[in-house]
Image 1 (cartoon, rainbow, N blue to C red):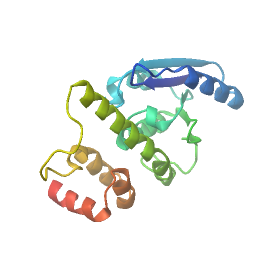
Image 2: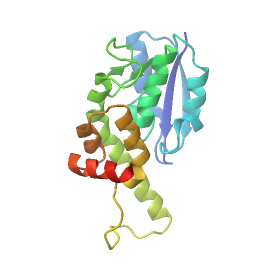
Image 3: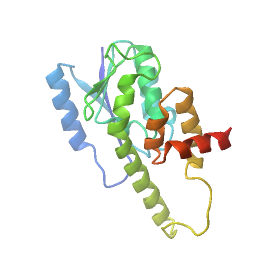
Length: 197
């Protein structure tokens, strides 16, 4: 059994020292043994499979433990977070997220998305939206783009999230949760889904 902790930061001014202390304290309290840290500086928008997290998940074995400071550090989309949780469950890896007090060892969790994960959505969605917004604004500002809403009607704000939304629908996530995640109404979500098909 090996205990790992995945720590990701996305900007130069972020560091992992505070997270390390939190993880070490958590591992000590739970008696999870020595912790091997895997750190990287990369945007959460990139697919976890193309990051060190993907490599780590591939090499981890049944009985290993993975600790993250919070679920939003795994990825910037609920879909990818669900995928990681499912992978750990399928491989028999114990996953702990300190901020949410979450563990995948809960007997109510199935091989796909469960009510336990649904409950977590409300807790982490605000962090994800905030972090995605900040990263997008920083990137636009760095490129010299003018910030603010463009003139004209434009496309639906859900267009860029189409793949994620349709996957969440396939996973039978309640429409109310999906709508809240993408800051829209259930009625607007239904209209978008009709146009996306």
